[in-house]
Image (cartoon, rainbow, N blue to C red; front, side):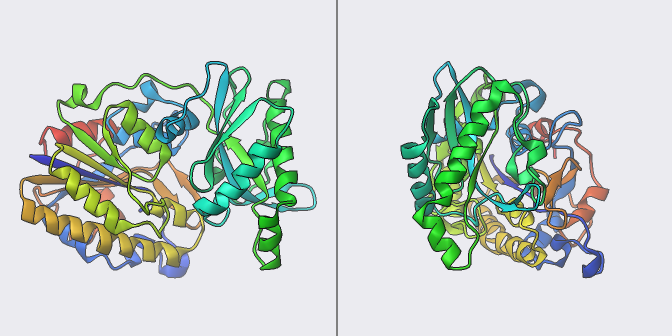
Length: 397
């Protein structure tokens, strides 16, 4: 038996009053997901423990079989492993995201945490400028391939949690800035970056074209790196992982999975779905378990456009679920788990810790005809994500 786990970020949502109190998932045309429900078991799973922040690293650790309470690690540390770089023992690893801040009369508001989906090449221009021009601070910058990058800085570990920019959409940043003498170097670097970006030819060109400048960095994701156990030792199965996320790749590498690089995998709705599906099917030929991580649902949700989210859901159904299921039927002897990692609200432009749906195919039917949030109302509740994965791999459905 082979096992395929599709983790899709932010697929579920809250009802929209202006859309007849329906969610984007209910409004989207998803014939392939709907067809699965006729021969599947489904229900709710709690991917975010009550006492932890609802971050991506928390839900993804759990869905990859690790208890986030025990193995919680800093997002930046995991991303560094995914990127193939390592901070020195006296350095702190931080995510260094390229963002757009909007000035107000007394603050700066987080307008766009992706720099309008900054491309690899454009990100490289700005990161190179930081490498060349940031002075008087012991830092190194590492290109992540888009808006999400890394910075290592020589300083003692930071005890306070630095908030991710995707939690701050529409918020004034002053209340979330690092405070105190222990972290003043971070503020110094951020101030330098704002000056460098303000004077950069790339941003002058953007402004001339009527676009928002990418005018700041945002530092976050501090934390230790836990010693993650091997996936094979825990489940006695080989595994591969396909993801555009550096953080998810880091978890995969630390647990001994084969992490597959896919050309054109961006993490946005323009990602190369076809290449990710092809890579998934190829890995299924040689591995017992394959994890496919899709993060586009979260990205479009946090942009706040319900129509874009509906289109993303339909693309996911047509370009991922459809081809995968068709190939599964031809290959035979494969079980599929489709699970959402957390709710992302396109209305609030935030995500939360509410339960999310899982679906196991093929399995006993749950007697429904549509894949949407109603799956949460029936079926077995899994109180945590590792229990769900364990049950799936033990053929308990």
